[in-house]
Length: 115
Image (cartoon, rainbow, N blue to C red; front, side, top):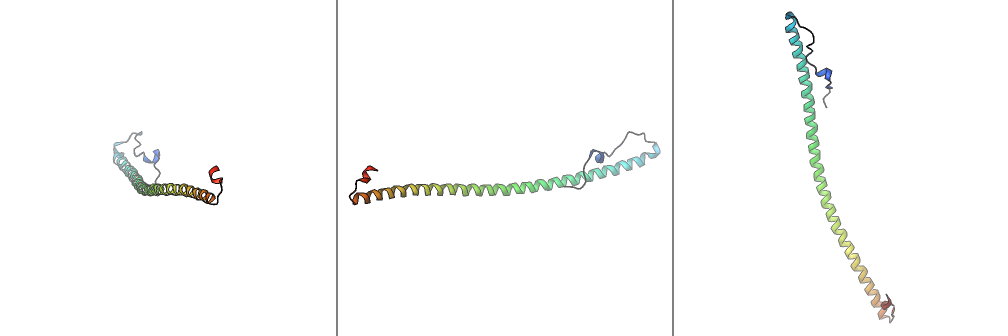
């Protein structure tokens, strides 16, 4: 951010509470112009600093959005793979149970019918 702190005191360019004599008008006008230039410069520095910060935040937001899209895609792929593994596990468990029952029946036992 800009180095100049914008306080109310700093940005006050005109202090017109005193009466100005005709001979001092040019001097007071010059003083006012110099103060106003300082205020304008400080404001411009602060505005430019804010613009840079906003642009940096926008760039970061775009990067974060792309990262989130990639994470969402990976998560969807992971869910599909997990569902596939669960289904395979269920199918394998059923196949193992059927094979076990078949072996028990082949050995002549009746335990397979009880299960």
